[in-house]
Image: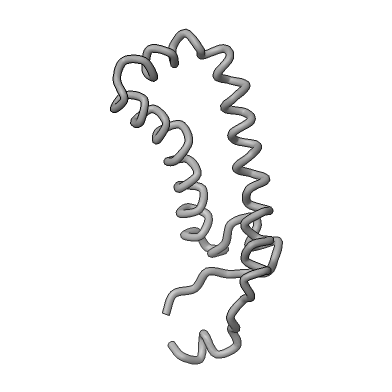
Length: 96
């Protein structure tokens, strides 16, 4: 097990931030798409935000937080062990 991690090194904070900024390009694209779709789905969405604060929180979680979380979780969990930004920067997520 040790031999497999022998050639790996820690990545600097700057490299990690740049990788996150690349990932943020994808997240921003999703948010822009969501913003555009919301114009057409407005009659369906407004009642979800006005019904109660709990309903608004759940809707926000399902539309924004969960997809972004799943992007990171799935991207780092598949065979490549990295999001698009991490692959672009040559970073791989490993576990000991």
